[in-house]
Length: 186
Image (cartoon, rainbow, N blue to C red; front, side):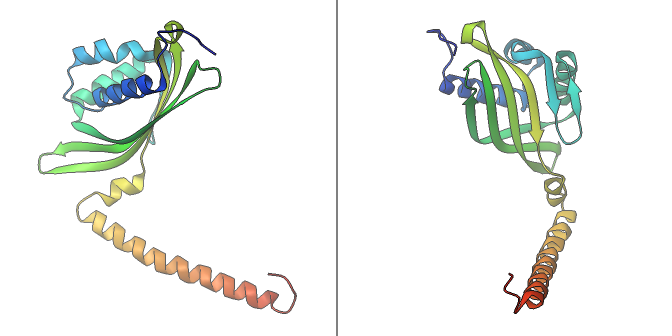
């Protein structure tokens, strides 16, 4: 276990990851600020994963981060954040639950429920850290659900699906219970 008076505590790590998330997921943040406050925390073999992308290496990560800030407009609302240190105290995982607000359309902000999972290792004797992996989790269903008009049709199909599967499961239980009736099995 790392021991150092200047070592970051869980609360300080939480605060720093809150700040990092708000910087990386707000495309109004200038490149200079990213270079000063985010890049130093990116490990050399950092891995980025989302439902569409798998990219490894600091250079690719930075290119992707810069590209998102140039091509797409979005912000991020954090609902909750949790830091879990490993047993050795030399790294851990941070989970961030929130909504990525995609502002590509002038008249519509596209909310995308997102969970971010950061893996990190402590550096400088526990006084800092480097991110080794960032996984961005969101669902295709959420993407469809938030499209105007198509989202309403999608939600209606889910209600129909609820009735269909409830009926299917009821029927499966009725058939199973009837076939086992009198055999002592359930």
